[in-house]
Length: 238
Image (cartoon, rainbow, N blue to C red; front, side, top):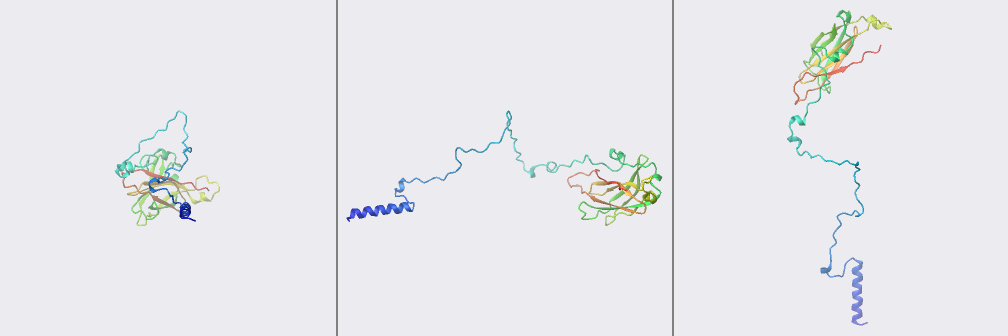
């Protein structure tokens, strides 16, 4: 074997080794670097389009670039709509006209004695509400009459209010001619909280009816108001 055969075999061996290891024998000046594909999605494949109705154009609204911190306080914290809340004292409202019964006189509420105790606390029952003003009222002869009133102590509890109720004998009859209990409204006012009222609280002779209130704080950004949150009680099913 002469030198040319040896050189030819060496060159073929070199090319075979280059092919196996992925290296090209083309000079560096002739090489072109492969550019990685940015979008691997086939050209014939398109993204789905949102369905549209005939004759209807999609309109876009300009975005509000104003940050929440730059907006006025009134826009960031608008006052809630309290139009459906009713006030408690003064003239009889439309809500009061739907409340029954309406007593013809104080004597018609009963000649016996029952008791009402009111417990006033914050909305989460975390703390008692001190010095809250509490009134027990009823509609007598077309007017709202204050039957009892008082303030809460350090524990958020009122004194035990004594109220007129029917005789206990009516509670023992199967079909009493007179309702065996009286119905009262209890209103609570406290500084820093929405007013609250509980409607149709039943009271029986010799029994203490305990009424709990969870007062809702007035937000700091709201103005003082006289709105009332009203709770309606269901009459006892005797």
